[in-house]
Image: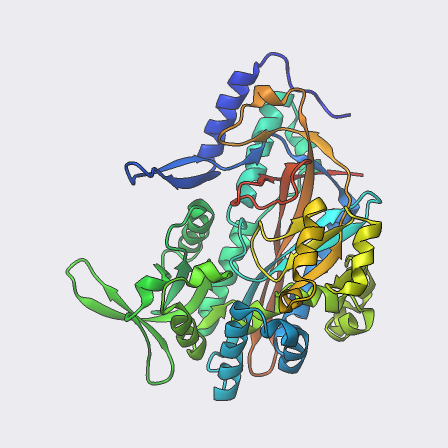
Length: 485
């Protein structure tokens, strides 16, 4: 039986303690004051307590990540399949077209890098029938592996402090999350496989990074686990222009200006993208040229253009075909193939014939573009106007219609920077979304897997009245699972 909040505490004290504990655990975002141009930190949107998640579905999602990692690798290496699936989209989506053209050029020239690193996150909703349903697979700038263990630790504290749970009870119900350690180790192992100890990791970032703590947590863990033997450089696209070039054997070289204004050349082992997933990330005029230069190099890309293309949302509708999906699931994971296939929701192209589906179920669909990041989908009564607007145009090729995943709600509290816990009494209805992180390093020459790992999990929540779960977009909150039967 779930325990209630101990009445010894009042909600103002709980909120103050929770905000301070959140900051203690690094659950914070960086903001900038428009008046003073100075930066400051505030707590990330988080749930006060962990949310219930069915244990069997959690375990299934974790089990499926290894075959999904391998599937993404197989798709990324099947250039003809990628071309066939994306053909219509390439005609109307400039962003995807530019990325595809980079991949095509690299394949024509000959791939210089020996390996490609994928850090993925598969997102799921448990529907009203208690079935696991796939939302999407994220393939670039996958966020919150750095902070997922922190929210677990935060919840262990709040459950003990405010609800009197014991360590034994929490150990049984809250799964240990080592996503931070494991994502750092994946980058370290990839750096070592690159084989040059004096090389460095390049993290390509946004011009103004809000989710800085998630990124820095990974950087600090790499330094800790490697005994500070791996150098890490963070640069936005505009900071790489005229400072990045290819060596005689296509090594990726970065000019570093030291504190004496001297230029030192550093070879890059891994380029880890924490940006480059939407058109706005390429607003700097030479961004695409820099992305091409990076792809032409020997450095390990995370992700390569091929892996990023494999994450385009249109593949969801194609892999919904069991015959096609089976082709991309490695034989050693064939026992999980049916489980993976059952997580897919029905998809439909945007055309006149499928308009009747909206008429029959006006609230039963999501209109999805091929974009990473939150805030791009259309839900509910917003679907039909957008559908009608694009139905007879080429823009329709950039969208797919997916059946809406109806899910039950749970009671909880969301601690946002601007909200008060006392105003949420006796709790609000929230919905959850489960994510599973995966890491894979594959040979670009033979497709051999150097490693394939399940590296952790993430739970995000939102108010039941909200459609999006993007934390940085302001819609969702970081959460952690409390496993139930």
